Amino acid sequence: MSKNIPEKVSNRLTLYHSIMVEYLEAGIETISSPQIAQRLGIDDSQVRKDFKLLNNAGKCRVGYLVKDLKDSIEKTLGFAQAKDAFIVGSGHLGLALAKYDNFNSYGLNILALFDNDPQKVDMLVNNKQIFHISKLPNLAERLGVDIAILTVPRQNAQAVADFLVASKIKYIWNFTPAVLKVPPEVKVWNENIMGSFLQFACKDII
Amino acid sequence: MSKNIPEKVSNRLTLYHSIMVEYLEAGIETISSPQIAQRLGIDDSQVRKDFKLLNNAGKCRVGYLVKDLKDSIEKTLGFAQAKDAFIVGSGHLGLALAKYDNFNSYGLNILALFDNDPQKVDMLVNNKQIFHISKLPNLAERLGVDIAILTVPRQNAQAVADFLVASKIKYIWNFTPAVLKVPPEVKVWNENIMGSFLQFACKDII
DNA sequence: GATTTTTTGTGATTTATTTCACAATAACAA
DNA sequence: TTGTTATTGTGAAATAAATCACAAAAAATC
Picture 1: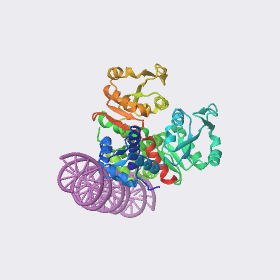
Picture 2: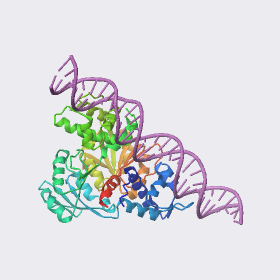
Picture 3: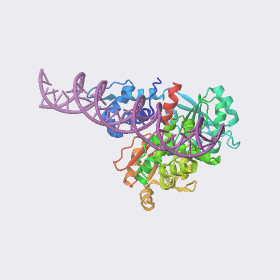
Picture 4: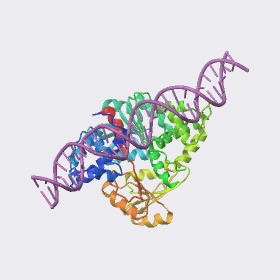
């Protein structure tokens, strides 16, 4: 795998994937690029070029096999390959993400949550235990976890990120608005929940 | 306003904004494009071109005024202009979003939640009431709300979206994995929580 | 006050992405 | 069987985005 798919493409791939799920449920076995394109408001050749990237050949006058497309997208985006992760910060957002079982179907397996509030420690959320943050380095090493989902308050974000780096975490999915400073070997993905929406909403509203 | 800023730019703007908040808190009054660029791992001319878009002039050998930049970003992204919205679907995600007070500081004001579960109706979440979904058309009209945050299960997403369209909702922030079919005058923003992260994670992990 | 240095602003270049256009293919209909 | 049509696959063209390169400005230093 790892063909270094551009972000824009992988975003489209997840949309294609949702359409495939819908078609499968409806019992439709084939789909054409113009059908998908119209649905998403994009060009049909775009769809075909994306599928080319998946090495997924279509059939003239028929289109693509829905099942095959779904499988290739899952393989390419790594839904298949399960990855373990910790949620760091057990506030509203952290708890909601822990309850969000969709992660699983996308190949992301939440093993545990962490917090510094003694009151929360040992609580169970969706069958996942909340540990005191001090237990993280040990557990990360023992369980071989190197992905952390960061949902602490902004004020603590950098300090906790430093702690995660020291705990050999290699991927931080940053749900805080802080711009984290980390060494180059650690990768941060900023989840910009507001950014894109605001732009979308403001274009017309303001 | 409404200069139709590309998505990539508005994403960077939110990151710049976070850095401005951080600098202000640290009492630093000016910032240069190379400082920001290094922090985000991008080119410094990129930063200057983005600021040009904000009509925000810098000063040679000094940089930009942090306060001014923060204000222009807020104005451009519409943090200033308050917008009212409903959360439709009071499951884990909907409730978490209702508790997520950050929305407010970004100019998005959650007025109420909706659900079809009679058990949830009339509950208060972060001082916001949960109404039965049947009350939505009326409330939307009376309060002049045309933004809905959709957090229902995928299976119900299209049906609820149809209902929202009939209720004169004009903007749907879609947190479900469904690809919604709506008339052209209604705008859907798909929040692709997994898409971008998976790509990020899989690039190296798989 | 001259010189050095840092930083902006921006045109030119490069790279990436999207759209266009159309030949090749194969199902379908007459 | 033969023409018609829908669809793929893909080069070429157009558009968008990022990077480079450097002149102009102004603070800092000597």
